Amino acid sequence: MPLTTNHLGRPVLDCSPDVDVSCSRRDGLGLVAVAVGARIGVDVERVVPWTGNTVLEGWLSPTESADLLAVPPPLRPQAAARSWAEKEAVLKAVGTGLLTSPRHVPTTPGRATRRVGTWTLLPVTVPEGFEAVLATSAVPLPVEATISPTPLSSWTAGQLDVA
Image 1: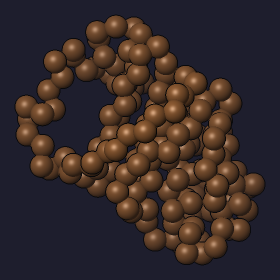
Image 2 (image 1 turned 45 degrees about the vertical axis):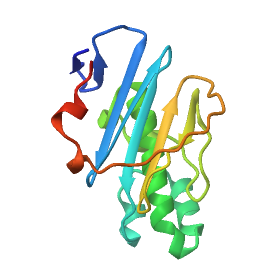
Image 3 (image 1 turned 180 degrees about the vertical axis):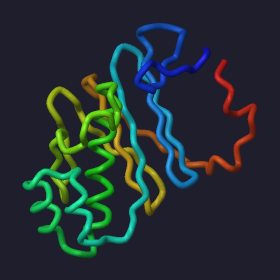
């Protein structure tokens, strides 16, 4: 199944119009999400040290900036990373990615956002120091899964082939 991109740079699997795919990588950690019959977007972000400049960068609405500043200082880096991952996951699911301003995706910094418009947001388990979110148009079913992350650097080319 060849993986290509559309005119906006969104990944596309050529096998079927019913199959949707989204990818994200940050600092050696990669995520790939595949769905049948639903649109999806996934994003992973590194939790970085907090600076007051975060609220001045323009990707948060005034309400989100206030919410983020209300988060206890030790938790702000994780809350900011989570908010960005939520925004980017939705924009990837919509299909525009960062061609649309993240400011237009409402989140609730300091609390996990559950819905943005018609999108359901689900946390993705990733190693400490990262935040990851899956946005989906589907109604999620309760699933229990254990994910053992493997650094991309330890994969061989054969493991990355899609059959």
